[in-house]
Length: 187
Image (cartoon, rainbow, N blue to C red; front, side, top):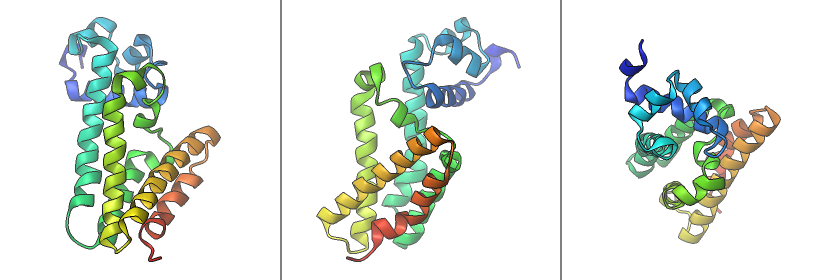
């Protein structure tokens, strides 16, 4: 398919993979071009604002995914365990069982941290608030629910880092498996 005919959404999906692998600072225009199969001029056709606009489009895509696959079940109705299992399945799929890096985690360092700090902070806060909501619905007191929710995000992010650093997804798999007990258990 000629580059100009490539749908913008497909370009964004490919950029998401590149920013996941390289982060913002290390993702050169050459790497972004290679990841998308587009020349630099074609990339600028889609994203006149350059790499920063590309990253913002990727964050828009990731935020939309999170709203649909993570936050909607957390805020929905039905049994808490079922909703949490939906969230776990979505995280498992998005991170390919722990084989894929966290986009947000790779964008909280370097120049990206300055550019996207408010947005990334909001994303992490929404995730913590969503996990806390599920715990509170199970009767966990508010302060403890928030602590467990923060711990859940720390464990997920840490497991993703460990999985990438050791090329072993077992820690991520274990975190997802134990998440319901860690988050929802009665005191």
